[in-house]
Image (cartoon, rainbow, N blue to C red; front, side, top):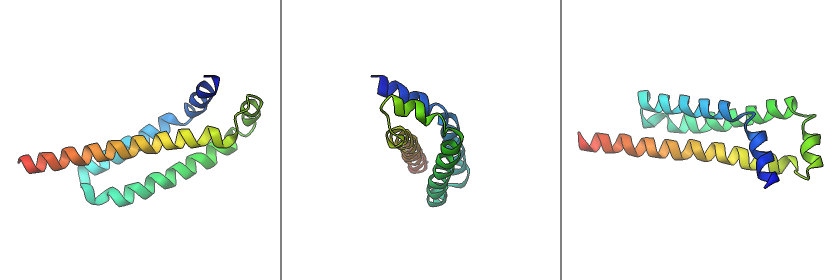
Length: 106
């Protein structure tokens, strides 16, 4: 249980930015349509890489704390980035289905 709490604590350091980028992507899809999905998909991948790079360098000393808890850097990053990307993909799919449903009902 302490491992999950530690991962959530670590994820909270970049969760807001991830959700903000997802919301921006959803806004772009709403205004421009589904044709923008491929561009936004790669934009999200790129921004996830940038988030990793900057948080990794910013929290370099904080890794010692997690290492003392027996949690590796990989165990910290994989669930956080996977959750962020899953939220992005699920929200995109739901939005696209709603947009297609709205077009079919018109």
